[in-house]
Amino acid sequence: MSDSEHEGDNSTPKKPKIIKKGYKQKFRSEWMSDPAFKLWLVAPKNTNDDPSCKFCTKTISCSKTALQRHKESAQHKQAFTSASNQVRIGCSLKKQVNTSSYKETTAVQLASFIAEHNLPLRLSPSLLNLLKSRAPQNIQEAKSLQEMTLGAIKCM
Image 1 (cartoon, rainbow, N blue to C red):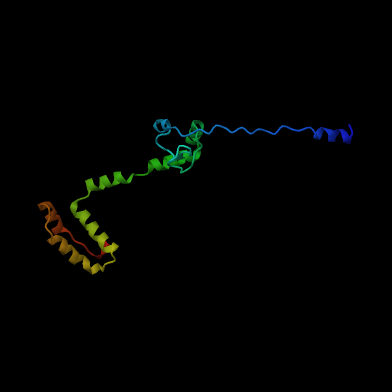
Image 2 (image 1 turned 90 degrees about the horizontal axis):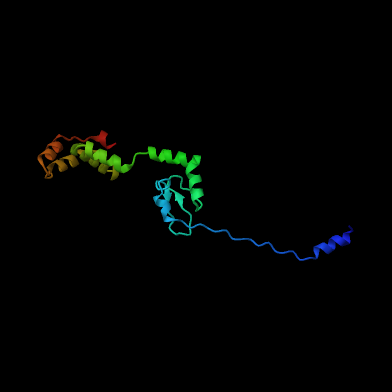
């Protein structure tokens, strides 16, 4: 074949490639109740957006296969394990309320007040006397207030 024959081949029009648009899966609310996803999946604000993982803070492609792959990923497993080992603040506050006495709670609140407002530590006995003089709700509170002491060490 000569060069002239190759030039003739180029003159035939080529059909343009047609790019097909793929189907974009929208978020399905049923995924939120799926036991495999419900603990960590965060629904998008808009149904056209992709969901995210509560623990990894990573956006995941909106398909069930992608969600399953993310669940099995090492990054997700590590984040899920570390998050499940953390103590929830609500649980720790309930334990504190159940185990701490009125006296301990009041002493901590008073020391926190002094520290938060950057008050001189020598005010602590006066503030404690003020608290003791207030009308307690019951005899147990009155007794606890009378036994309470507060010095510079608790406020630091």
